[in-house]
Image (cartoon, rainbow, N blue to C red):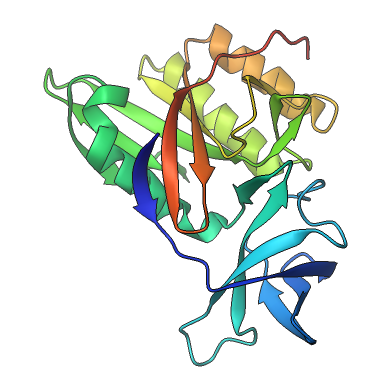
Length: 236
């Protein structure tokens, strides 16, 4: 595994409950602390009562919570769940492995505009070709199958429609899946959670949207690049 991004946890604790989408209560020693949950998903097998989690101290003085939740332990692995770091992480991947993942990559720009929307990156290649990229982070898995999303996502549906629209204009477009489940053997869209997303996913591939799936692992201190994952067989 290749280390690509350093993010050290400060505390380990026991997850108690998630009172709302953005807040988690964690027992650290004899105290209960509040931690910001920076992930829009349900995290069904990560944020469960009694599970071990990792926290990082917040630097901002005006924060209501003194900690951010970084990861939870599942099947002996730390599953990184803080989407607030995904921009820096994806940038680190492009800096260190950009030409390996996207051969011929020359440079990239973040959050490019097109029509009435934005995507995560626009990649520029040495042959003057361009590629729009949208990134989705996968933190859920069942029986060694990585799944996204773990909650209905109208935002994810919208992004797939953007990618399809680009292809209809003859522009290259890509969906880049970052899988944070080191035990996963393949990936598929979770049609049992969001059938519209799964249908659009299939339509996007049929329209020529490129798909990249890469697996990552976390060990309390660093995020590691493990390599590519295949797409599982699925019927939306």
